Image 1: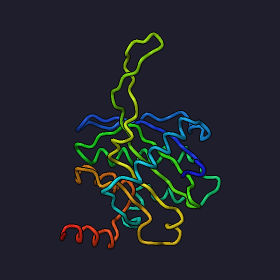
Image 2: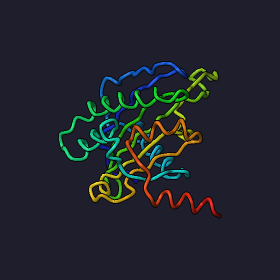
Image 3: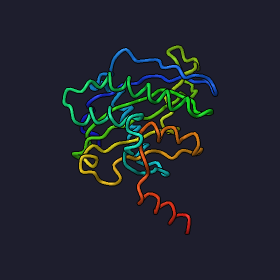
Image 4: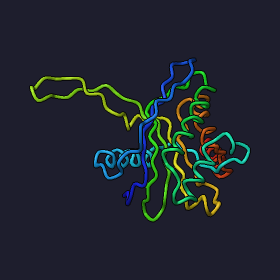
Length: 207
């Protein structure tokens, strides 16, 4: 159960395969007291938490300068950190990483930080739209695209409390179905997988 949403924003990253990516910046952060936003955040949090195939790890010092880590550290350590400015800086890094992978595409980029069970988290997820229909006021069936929360393929989550304690598994991210494409997202986070995660993967492969 989410206790509080501290900040949230949705930008757009558009890219056709093999072409330069284009960032469409949101004009401002979202109202964290907005009921539809809270429903969206709860849904993403729930889907992510229940998803199998996550990797765990820590920030890699060799990737720090070209990853999201310095900006997330600002968010963690500075009470007056500018979430919107941080999100714009992170979008530029994400754009660069997307362009490094030929088949990587974009989507709606949702970023939010929140508290749950006494822990503060940061989540980033790339969410795409899916076609749909609805019945309008005139009882006609009309197109109604929606965010495909269950279809999220690229997402990551950082546990600020465990990060401060320097534990070994404070970052998690979805592995994705295509490791070469999803690797860009791991590089964006600046994350190296932990030895325990590697051991878990090896053990799964032996059963």
